[in-house]
Image (cartoon, rainbow, N blue to C red):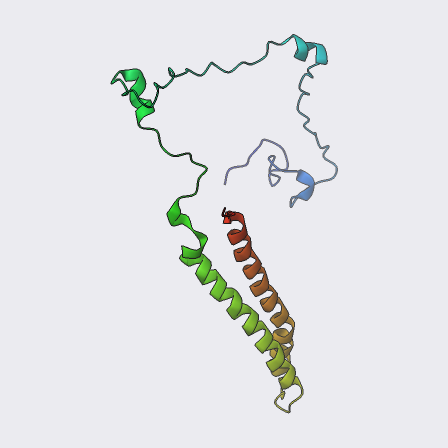
Length: 173
């Protein structure tokens, strides 16, 4: 690899701080690079700058009354094909019909049950004579410490699913 600079110390890469490179010689002075400061804008300069104005939005002519037919002129063609507002939820996007939320609900129940089962099982195994080696002890210790977190993950998943249902809930009436 060719040297990166013409310095006497060819093992020092000039792109990086020489103090942290192999072959650094403390007797060579380090030149520090500082960029030129950017000019500051004063309040007077900001106040004298013209404000940025967005271009005006073209307006469509008012729609004719509902009892009159819509004329087939170019200015009314887009008005005739008016879609429903985007804020309304589609009827097919009900959270109760979402298979992913159902799957997450099942997973949350399974995680809570698995966490509780692992905790009880590992606690019973500590009190038995089955712990014969350090590997058995370590796996039981890891299981008894991990089991509450598995149950908490299941609870957090259930809260997340409940949050999705609550955010989509609309009061009837």
